[in-house]
Length: 167
Image (cartoon, rainbow, N blue to C red):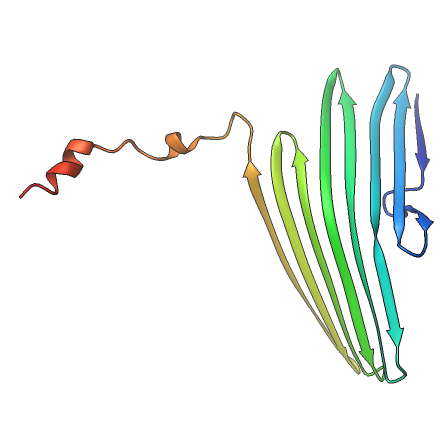
């Protein structure tokens, strides 16, 4: 038997301050043996919008942290992510709309640190729409199973190297 308790969900967090856009959620999963999984997120930032008649636009900047811990047969796996999300859009005479979304995250999971960045640009002109996505992900460090720099680089033969300079 498993029971899940949560205050809001990850995709629909609870907003507790409308003026600055603070959001959070908490979820826990329990079975007869105890805690199976716990996850939580806290997000904060600000949003602004303007409308001057012929043009309107909005921008939001949000940052936050996400934590997840999962228990499995005595083993504990955890995940920690910090992120920044920036959204913006502008519409002119309801004919041209440009939307931009930027997402940057740093994650520590399974003894590895990685970073991810996504940029999405969407342009709408009357009946035409085009979206361009750029995505990059990089690993920064690894566990003891990853090769070291010394393993990847061969040891130099200094005698052969110095003989190259002999006249």
